[in-house]
Image (tube, rainbow, N blue to C red):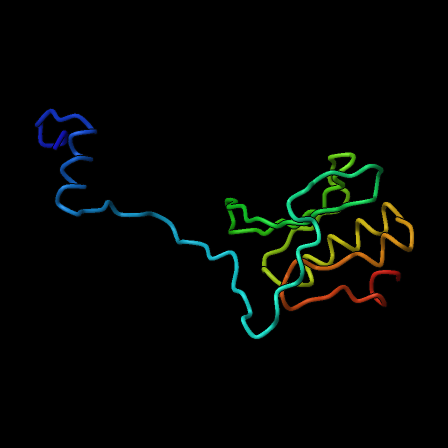
Length: 138
């Protein structure tokens, strides 16, 4: 309406569009970040949202996200030491697959060299992947 020289406030346009059930055009493509495999049971939640650790390498949490760059979408996986509150392992990939998440865990294990009891607690957060001990300790 402003292009046609009819002065109107943005909130008025929002109200009319909501009233008429209209939505604006969305630019760019949408990103689906998680495609769960329903045939595989979900891993146990061992943290129960209690992100507290009494010493370094006692608890690591993992996550991954996506970032839009000038070229394309990139996925970033990272492992955080809860005690030190710092990233101990990370990996960037063009594809969202299990190997790139495990790559971040492998980097963290190589860099920090946690105790054997801590290594036994390492699990992937995805439904269909478990860390492969042979590739972790190469």
